[in-house]
Image (cartoon, rainbow, N blue to C red; front, side):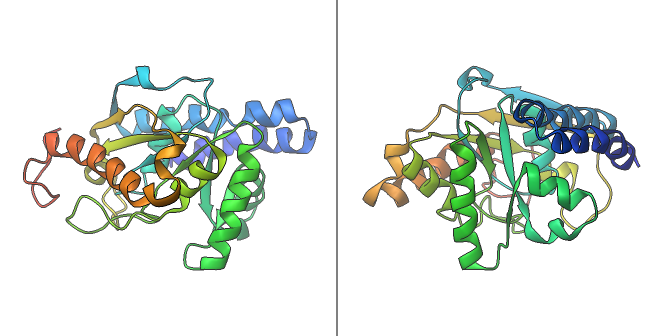
Length: 240
């Protein structure tokens, strides 16, 4: 109900910005959902604990990436990232009335199961990046429902960094799976921790360095998670 009410208040602002065709208004409209995300989390009873914020320049351009364990991760990213940032969205959402129209203007759709479509999405992301936008991408592609810390990391986000020269800035989300477990409709109030890390230069993912660069990112996130899940996996409750 909270989400629906906020959406009803938000949509007119986004529609006005899109219909105006003003690049300035559309740019400013990108920051409206971030304010909505913060209000949503507050009303859901989720307390954000954001650490190492000094690593991000709000005027900088990055490929933000994170681990992905809950549907709430995108809301958290919207709430904590201060930059002009765009997201990838499921292509099926474009069929939704009104919301699909807005998503087409503000985000980049992707059909995750279609390799050819994923390639087109990468090109679309690169086009948006040329306008100065940052991007938030979960390399795992979908929520990790296993007990292991990570699923498979796809190359897309790292390839975009290598091709554009834009650094990768890793974020680690701790507790999102506890706040909104995948497959459940109830959101549990409590603390959710977000770690920022130093940007990693695009050169780290070029040529033969791709696998080593990805592993470096994974180890950065693993170190954070081990602080809260000393068992080395998600089978035991986290220290939040």
